[in-house]
Image (cartoon, rainbow, N blue to C red; front, side, top):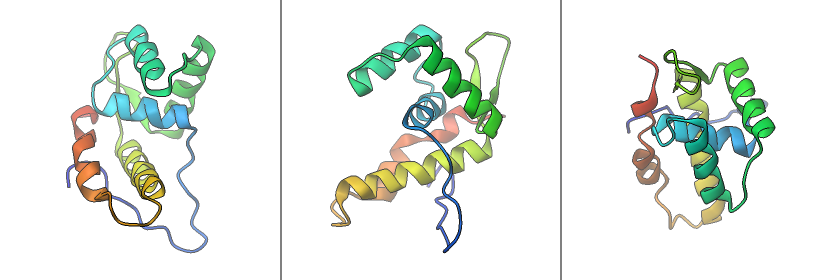
Amino acid sequence: MTGGEVIAFQKGDRFPTAEVLDLAISVAIGRHLAASEDEMFSLIQDWFLRPASGAELTSAIGRLLERGWISRAGESAFDFCLTDAGIDGTTTLSGGMIRMIDRGRGHLKTAFLLQMLDLDKGKCS
């Protein structure tokens, strides 16, 4: 699989911390789906059927930078890339969400769907 390593949690291990918006922004950055703040607002509204505020977007970006999941990739205000920690966290949480939606039935092939994310595309070089 390309992208991050799906981390198996051991008893007592902490989950990667992320709000839903943090995860969505990480996926968008990893897949190069939004090259500007306006594109990110549009994408979020399309995914969640509701807009995000400027404060919500700014807070999420701040949390991702502080957590070390993303870093600045260039000079423009909205030029970010995923770090190794960001790829691992995003992949692990996305895989868990797929399994949660599937309700443990095994109908959705988690590894296949995670490969479709191709988060390495937005990885910091």
